Image (cartoon, rainbow, N blue to C red; front, side, top):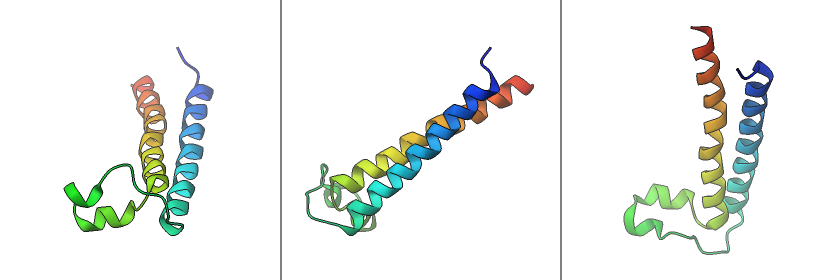
Length: 83
């Protein structure tokens, strides 16, 4: 059985990674210059491609999305232990 402290560490790691991803996305969004990894206008609406103008913004958004896994994993596991 994993302790509550371990879940707290997962959650803390997830929030820190989310903040780093948000910072990276903000940097990429406001400081343009490098090309994006994917050609967003080719297969997505224009409003999505506007939010992902370069690879820094793409990496930041990906980090924000992936960082939500440890946050909600901790909540899911702690909820199962209570039942």
